[in-house]
Image (cartoon, rainbow, N blue to C red; front, side, top):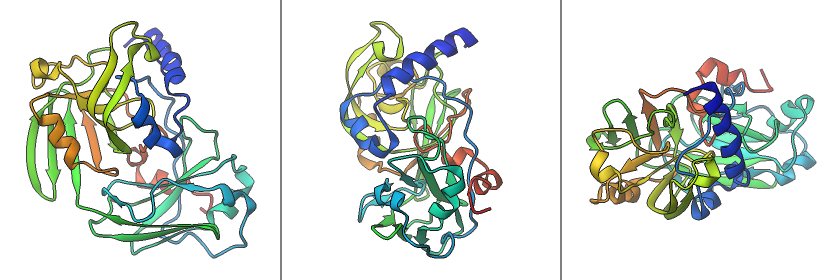
Length: 309
């Protein structure tokens, strides 16, 4: 892709995704999303803390009263789901350590908080926690954000899907059982993001309009069995073009397409938020703040993103 084309995609796709903040990714998938996306800015500097509990209890800070946790009470999530806390206003750099001391994760895991620059929020409005490696299935977790916000969730079975854009296949490993299905990914110049993404939500149908990402009248309509991967509009969904091109060529506008013969529906029905979708063989790597791209940051850099180091 030329730098001119990349810059054009940046500006146009930002406009299409502007209203879709990470704190409300579920609402994004229920309404609309582009069948393709722009190239995000370079990854933000990652995070910190070497244990699940991040420091001693501090007096409640007023700014934490507006903290939101991305995981619902009692939810079961996949092994890749980070705990993402967003704030109604940016936390100044000099106060982030104080805020971070009030974030606590109760579970037996080596993990760390890290401040993440969300593509739809200001710097200082998002901090994520993830383990050093994927969560172990069956793990029970309690999260405290200040004195007034608590969540309990459970890690479900493991599902990791690897999309290889060169072979036009997706290898799905679910609790050790493996199968491979044909896919079609982004065409040259509209390449699917490379790297590790985490399912944020899913919807049986999503309206996608090519004009929101600068592709004219290429498409405008509902796509079914849509699994949401990035805030900039990457989905893994049913696509009639996959009936012809899956396993053979990449022809989409950036999303990953599955055939209408039941392949897309099957994957949709088994996937849950927090499941991992890795794309290999493509080009630019998805940024940490473009959805849940946290796993694209190595552990040392992730820990360095904590205000407590």
